[in-house]
Image (cartoon, rainbow, N blue to C red):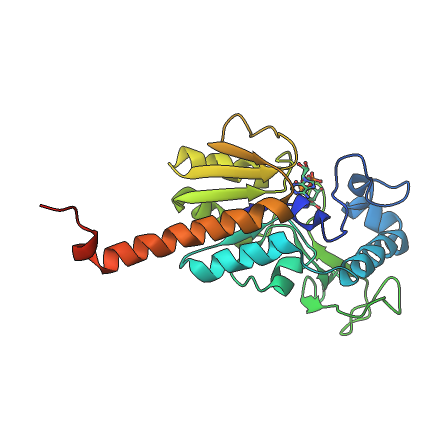
Length: 250
Ligand code: OAD
């Protein structure tokens, strides 16, 4: 499973692209960079503080809950997400690979320093101090997220690649599939022989390459998908547990 901002849209968290801009007159691309942080850490942290408040006022929606249901129904299920909002976790998902980090964590920026890059939980909301400072050394903290021009966390990237190249099926939900390397994962899966289905309110650059596109809101489509997939799995398990009654008459 690969998810993007469209999954959280029905929780009231704006997507990055599309008609509804994420924040006032600023574009995410202009704030989510190391250069922006170096120039004006207060502005960048104000943006994250705003998003953190928005997310904490939101609840996981039917799509998040259906995805957590799917995980409970399948051994080896992995959720690769580009979302940093933590809503999947709040919905009960556990096997999560966070490709772009998490806005509820931060890390120290002082180099060289024993705590440089040390990740800490940052749950205070709203932040009492902007920008927040490292409890160990007093240096600036930065959000533990991936900014434009930065590489993905190596372990998350490697894990997502292993999952994509070895899965039997991949659902791709609520992503515009334009930000790489995440956008390549459905194609890696497809190339390795997986059945790939995307769920989106609009066609995307990968629509022509995947096996099917289910057009609709994730909160409407995913509960139906999860219930049908889990039902089919239950039937298959019952059939394999009772081969006699299910075998064809001689
Ligand atoms: P985008 O904002 O690029 O795309 C959101 C996608 O969700 C679009 O394709 C919409 O059509 C679709 N969508 C919107 N509402 C939906 C709904 N209710 N149900 C289903 N689909 C819906 O978000 P991402 O693809 O996640 O990166 O963006 C990828 C990355 O770009 C983000 O992780 C972020 C951003 O810059 C970083 O911060 C590094």
